[in-house]
Amino acid sequence: MSKVDSRPPRGTLTEALPRFLRILDDPLYTSLVDLQDLVNYETAAFWRARQVKALHLPVTTSSISSPMGLGSDSLPVQVDLFGVPTYLADSMQFLLEYGCRIADQGCYYLMPSFRGEETDATHLSQFFHSEAEIPGGLDDVIAVADAYLRHLTEAVLRELEGPVARIAGGVEHLTDFLAKPTARITFDEAVTALDGDPEYFEFHDQWRTITRAGERRLMELHGPAVWLTHFDHLSVPFYQATDATGAKALNADLLIGPGEVVGCGERHTDAAHALGALAAHGVSPDDYDWYLRMKQEKPLHTSGFGMGVERFFMWVLRHSDVRDLQLLERANGLPATP
Image (tube, rainbow, N blue to C red):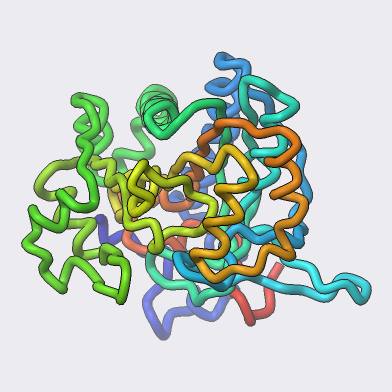
């Protein structure tokens, strides 16, 4: 990752300006706006060619996709909306699953998501999410997510190669990605390849997770991009379907640049399997009654993915801190200006 930093040296006059004024003449943010516009346009073009429909969805929900149970890796954001406890959407996946029952080729959106955890160099509490849901299984969604990332990368090189090269110090990381197929490795294979090193994995009672250091090591060995698949089922949220053993999730993370940029998975087709997964993860089914009824009334085999747009920009620009890649800075618990 590059050392580019939009923040001015301490003690300078520029540092005294609020961020929204400080960045106005910074070429990083001119390029950021160009990239945002490009992703919007090319995302619509990519899905239009596949007859996948864009949905307009609310940012409020009662059915968070990262509930406080086993496998949840983020905190929900709850607000009081005229006396009704409500969540700001951390993902629109459930509504995209609903949308697939109307739009039979699949559906997508590109809009904000909200998370309750602290921000850091690779995490935002408010970020833009490019999510899609399509008919089919894990292999189908891995193929389409990989094609989507390659489509965006080709567009960056076609439309913005010069500005990106100046900021990132070149575009070899983009051309290298396009030059060969993305590697694919299961979680069990990754543990074996990295000798179960505790620097690379965290071991819990019934499941394991990979660390950022582990992601980086896999990219060093197999990259520049790697699909890491079939996590321990209890390490992912309840909505991920399982393989025949019930022990492994039918899921995958795309590791590139800063680490995980895309997460995808196959869903439970029917209510019985989803209800069993809720119980296994220790999550009350009460807030998911509508979701279970949908699967009971209209079972459907779908899979979906979500890409963190700012993390994609981190990779494209070889930038070391995702917090710099918000045009308008947002962090939980801090006043927003403007």
